[in-house]
Length: 395
Image 1: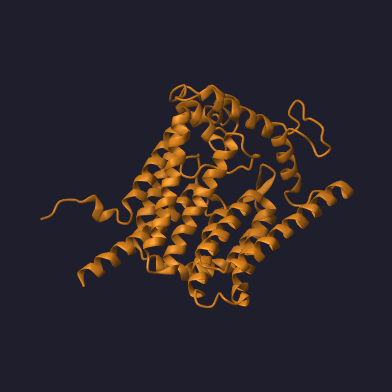
Image 2 (image 1 turned 90 degrees about the vertical axis):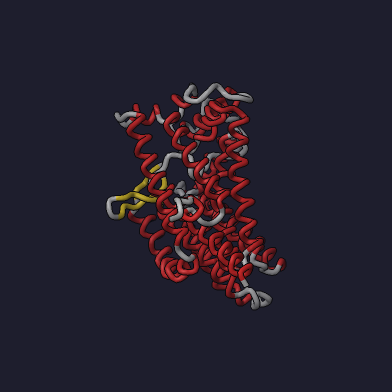
């Protein structure tokens, strides 16, 4: 009779498991420390909100475990069906979804409210990896890339209407997957030029509509306002005095103050003073609170954990014999890490506010579940690699 062995149950890359546990359980502590203002506004208690977040973390870890036990190859057919549903789901969200922060990003399904972008991002990356894997020998002709370009364009365009930053992160992830997936450089450059031209035209159209007709086109006004807030000047070059942008500008100022107050070693766990003056200390600005309490040392440690996760994702693609598995693994990993880096840069004042949360750490419900699902898929890929290695050694 053999004893219980953890490695027999938590298969795949053990380092990814360790990173996931470290980030998620540290996230519970960070959320508990930063939710006092939310508890006051919602007439609840910090413990009640923390337990709800902890429930989603534990549920997410369970999902990661279940998904990593399956063969990742079985994901592709399901994702292919969901890809056709995704544009309709995004359109439904834009028309009938819940509006929070001036944008419709949430819908209610079976009693749960979730951001459709979380699911759509997972679906597009999976399909992009599958399509590139099938076209490894035919990418010398541009026409074979059209299905990829069309799907990425449709999804990113619809996402940009409600969340420009999410669209940019997903678009950048798709570009990186295509580069790693050996799409010829000349086609990458052509796509880059087309995307940049499209962004300039779309932004110009939004600006023209705002100035001439005094109407907003998509998220143009939000992008302009947050950019003005970041640089401290409006479009006419006038200094912004007294926080023209209101709470967005105030929160970013408070985030920078929290970083400055934290110094090298921080003020100590639970001792943040800035969190009481921030409406989104537990989500959009949690990294600033982490630095305030744990200092630059803690902030760098968190960043290194995400970079460590990226390194393990790169190792997956280096070791795999299946193009789909490697591209899927690095695509999902890049999506998580890009979002984390965007959150961290904004929190330390290196970019305009976008509303991006810190994966596995920020308070979340269904959004954190989709992150755990993505990690489960990455672990499934690494588990498959381990089995292949053992099989080859046995021959």
